[in-house]
Every structure is written in C-alpha cells, then in structure tokens.
Length: 260
Image 1: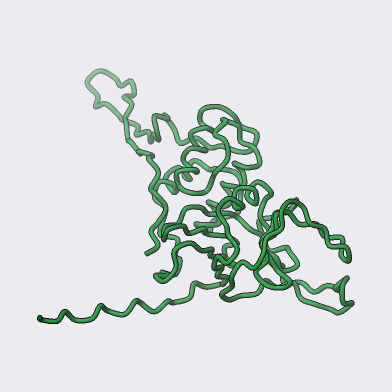
Image 2: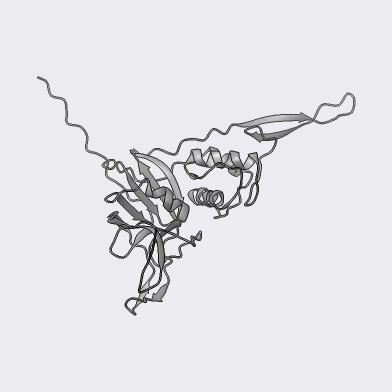
C-alpha cells in the first residue's frame, strides 16, 4: 500500500510577547508563530544562504523532495525541490519558499497515487502536476519535477511529417538504458542517462527542465536527478503515465478458513 511521505519534524509553536501598558491597564499580547525555534516563519529564495536554508534542505529531504547536499546554499537543486513541493500541492510553481510553506510542508496531504498492490518498485508520472514519483518496496520515497510533452506541433527532422509533442499515457516497462549523454545523429538532440519506455520516448536528463510541459514527448528531469535515479531504476521496472490517477481494483479477499 502506498503511504504518504514521512511527516517532517517541524513543530509549530505559539509564544506571546507582552507589550508595555500603562499602570493599571491590562497587558496586551501579540502572538508570534515559530517553526523549529524561528521567531517568525522565514521566507527563503534562490541565492539565500545560512542555517535557515540548511533547515529547509533537511526538511525537504525528509519529505522526499530533495536528495542533494545539505550545504546551506539555496542553489538550483534546492530551487528545483521547492518547485516539486509546490507542484505536489498544486500551488504556483515558484522556487520561492514562502513563510507559510513551512506549515504546508509539515502537513503534506496524501500524494493521491493508485494503490498498485501487485507491484513493489515502480514509477508513477503525473502529467497534470508534472511530477515523477518513485515507489520502492511499496513506499513512496522520492518526488521529482519533470517536463513532459508540450502538446505543440512541429516538423519531425527524422520523417519530415507534422507531429504532436505528446507523452504517451499508459503502463510501460523501462526497456533499456543509455549511460552518459546520447546525441541523435539525425536530429542532433542530446539527452542524458536515457531510460527508454517505448521505441521513441524515455525518461532522461536535460539541460532545460521548465516548470511546464515543454518536451517533444519524452519525460525530462534535471541532470542531477538523472544521476540520482540511475542508482534506483532498473530495466524492466514498471512505469505508469497518466493525467488522472487510475482506479486499481482491490485485491481479492482471502479464501475462507476451512475446518479440518
């Protein structure tokens, strides 16, 4: 059974401060919200640095959105993880981590994935949210932002035909894997650590992974995500691609006990 990502250890506490009051007047108290010892909920954005950023990286990692170094610098990998977090919740796909995002991160809802009770290790790609979910041993372990087919039409350099940039929907198996960068001699398109799931489409790293669907039909991930995924994917692993999560029939009930 799919379980929600581990709830990160962020404690929201409420303290009060006492304002100066005239003699005989009642004290006024202004509530302050704190997270992990912060006196306020801290807004963070790319190029910020310090212990607040390190706390954010640890929190994102615990929730399954981040797998890079905890270095206290809000660089590209942290920004990408924040975008994945916002995609997960259906919020604006921004790399800015707003103050209230601390509370949202501490109270993540269920990911809404199908319960594939017959499978253990597999991938789910939600084209609506543009996210890839890695499930290992039946548990959701990582959420990675992707950019899939953009839905536009273009002239195929290979065939000369007008084609539409759509990502195939359905149930697939990873067919084969290509190490490093691979450049097509006909199209000159280069992809990184390619995992084919059809004869024409795959999951691969790329130098541009926008927050919206933009590819010719493949599933793009950032190059650092492609490096990380290589240690977790195998040829033959199931891949499920959808716009809305399919309904999986529940397992059959166990046979009735028999009396000996």
